[in-house]
Figure 1: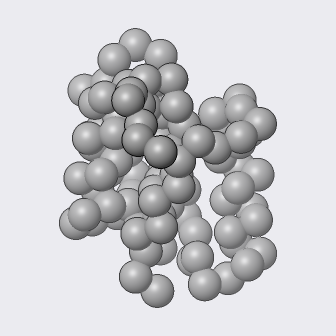
Figure 2 (figure 1 turned 180 degrees about the horizontal axis):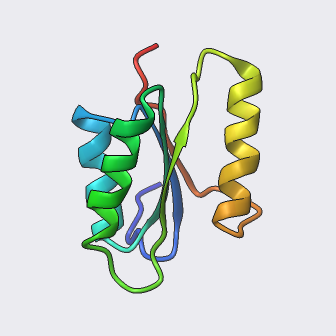
Figure 3 (figure 1 turned 180 degrees about the vertical axis):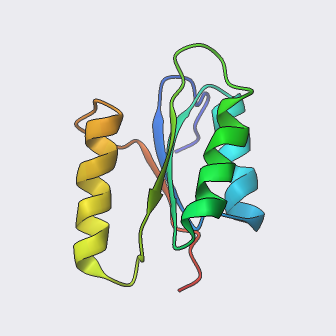
Length: 100
């Protein structure tokens, strides 16, 4: 199924601290999609979120989270944290970009 618009959606991007993940976060947010991104490196993922958030349309949220996606407990914490911070009960899109 093709996505016609990212506006109003919530996406998760793992491995968002650099490279393809960082660019994906930036592009999704610029197109009106709220994004929760995670990475092992707290400083890198915070830079990604701040950079993306600086150029987003009104109403778009971009949050950064620290998570090792190879650890189930951390993934579950990430899920709960992002749903709370985005005041949502679901995620629309998941981009599993982490290379762990």
